[in-house]
Length: 118
Image 1 (spheres, rainbow, N blue to C red):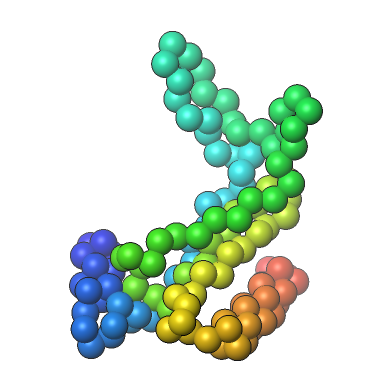
Image 2 (cartoon, one colour):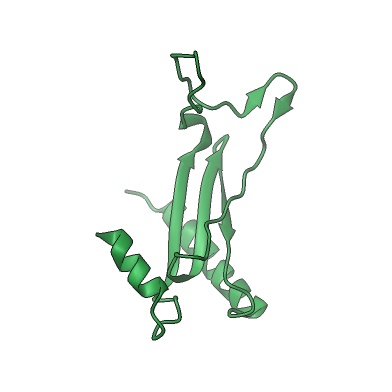
């Protein structure tokens, strides 16, 4: 099972908890997520980016380094058709320069994927 595999790498002294380069977590589209169940409310609709006078424009989120097992954890979520990503490398293990290099390469990959016909 993947949980045990990640745990074994995260606690390994040989890999120093960083067995692979990147791990991407994609929450998906915010507006397709179901609302949190509330006591006494049987119906659960989807989350909304706008409610009353308030509107969510962007959300950024990251996963914990405690048991992630990768050097560049990336958290992605889409709000109102726009994907936002948070790259959360373990500083000072990974320098700011190396982080920027990874981020630039990641953006280039996303551009290729977004423009591919298929």
